[in-house]
Image (cartoon, rainbow, N blue to C red; front, side, top):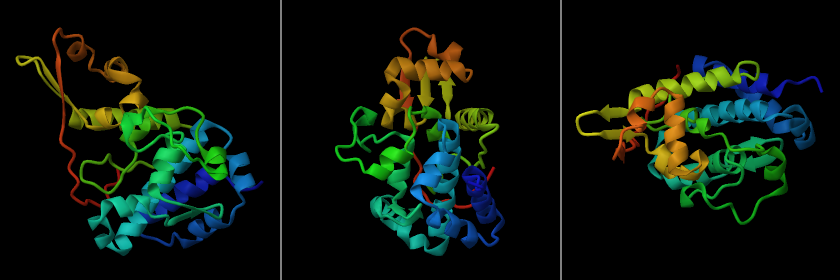
Length: 233
């Protein structure tokens, strides 16, 4: 196995950023065998870096080719337009199947998908990492900036991405005892291990003074769905 697939995913996303030829990287990822890919992506860090890069690259590739596809967002995320290791995937397959370990898109993350393919079982992470929600760019204005991840510094990179996103989206009003946070915390509540987990997560990223307030009122920021491409960090 000579290929480093995290590196190839980085090169794919970098080519998209620089508007250079990305088709050779796409072809490599399409043609690799499922066995070789799973053998190469042999840790959760590698899987997360690879699939975040792939997801973010394909959102840009698809929408730059035809922005009108975003008009029907349900179809945009569910249609199987991404081919990796000869497996045809949707953006939802990557997000909810692989990166969220076969979680149902609805249910706040408390329910698993009823039917899971062999390929998804092979490719998915072993444990859900809620930080992915601050690194996936779905094309919307409210999405996080696009970062290019590698396996060596993945944890630092995704911590930085999470912190940067929260700094722009979390608002605490001391006089009103009110904390406004991104809607990801509501949509994927189980990924954060419930309401207590949300507070623990926010403490870790510098909001310990806010979450320790008694009778704290938590609200969720409206998600801005307006299309916004090329938002690279």
